[in-house]
Length: 348
Ligand SMILES: Nc1nc2c(ncn2[C@@H]2O[C@H](COP(=O)(O)OP(=O)(O)OP(=O)(O)O)[C@@H](O)[C@H]2O)c(=O)[nH]1
Ligand SMILES: [Mg+2]
Image (cartoon, rainbow, N blue to C red; front, side, top):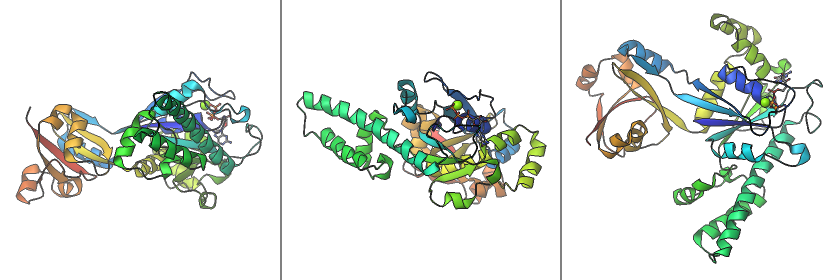
């Protein structure tokens, strides 16, 4: 999963990036040039993977991963929006996180003047919608030039124009699977899921719910403070967060929200060689989940042997699971559930 951090200059994108990845990308008062983006990868902590690894003692343990792209801020003040290079990178991510400045203070200047989270959220949404409208306009002109006005694609794009011009991001519209398929190639920005992240000040380190009620799909934390905590030795972090009244560190809060938002689940493959977590969309069929591992396994799919983690952990022994009837044989269309441990049978 690839997540793009976007927001206004100086909203704290790079600080958030450093907090989440544990990296030390440069933070300074000049926003990164359009050519640059910080890229970082994190392992998704999962107690189930730990437990399975302790049972199998494999040569290799592989956690799910999230990669982050920290993009240059939009230059909303000059009205020029996103730079071409940033746009390219933005089209490639699975989801956005809007980093919204909510921390007060004059030392860091907001390019639009005062600190106003709602204004910033609206402005960001508008930028995404505008970028999509430009793409549609270009495509429509081409279709018309080819004399294909009135084609299914032309009609669909016309509908999108209406949606965008009414100020609605495409992600808030229901599309059929077929429509989504024909839209996939465009990389529409306002269609991508988006998580709001309020970067609160040090005086509101828990991300006061009062600020949050207006927003759905939102989380809040103080990036600067959490970054400092994340740099402490692991054994001291818990104590520190507790003293500050922070129940869950920023990274865990973020990962949970991202999985929720993107409707992602994990399944596991286990063995002496490797215990591995795989991230898939909720509702993915067994045969497609197999394809995640290797296209050969998808092609030659025979069946999936499935046991749920919660059952397995009671008595971690596959033979025993079979005796108890907990090990199920599932076909191609079985919708994989979160926590399934799967062994795919295939033939190529
Ligand atoms: N007080 C306070 N300052 C913060 C917080 N987060 C970021 N800052 C400061 O705000 C400034 C900008 O932070 P960055 O992380 O560089 O912001 P950015 O969005 O990456 O900025 P550009 O890349 O220049 O667009 C830095 O001086 C940070 O130290 C915060 O939670 N509290
Ligand atoms: Mg930055």
